[in-house]
Image (cartoon, rainbow, N blue to C red; front, top):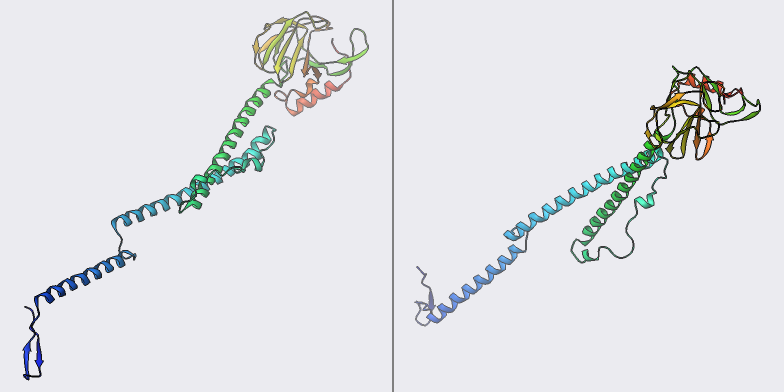
Length: 325
């Protein structure tokens, strides 16, 4: 119930009741409502402008920002890990793999090069976090480029490894006659006395004496180029091309175990010791040619002789004696 208000009337010396007109009552009500509305709106804006109270949309956006921040930090850590792994691979590539296969290392300028020329990230400018977006994108691009360079390097190393494997298979590395079948190493490479003319002439191979019919082995992988007796002085002989400029010749055979065009592996029997052609006694005349020139076979027995056996053969091959052909 509303309170009744009074005022003191000095003329009548008594209290009289204050009578409020209806118009004034309505005006007061509207004034109160307006003042309350203004205060309410102001208070609402105050709350919205402070972190004390957030709208559902702001709360959702804040969560998304926190999630993006977490993902960004994880991405940075992963990129750092990838960079460390890639640095390790690059170091091994230059210091180990390329050294083994005797090829030049890839320079740091090539590996770490950035991107020059036009602005690649112009479409990323103008945003609130453009600097972060651009730096991260550029870092990813550089990592991608380094991985492409490293991938191509590994492809090259793989090709070099395959070539190295083929090269090792092509290089003659065993004796054409086993030690069990070998009577002796009769004559070595170099100047020797001709058994027929007794004059000094250059002996292009090594002579291994063994009984007639002793197996002769291919000293490395290759293809039989010739298996005939149409070369002067060699009698029945076999020539094998091995690739990488290597060719081996086996002369004075009694018979063949291969034919022209046949592919052979190291250790395959290609023929048998004989005494055909310009030969003084049953033996094998063995030559190695590199890029068309005869070389000393003594340096190509790494897969067959131990150090003691090699020293013994080296001593015998170094003596200037009479050859058998």
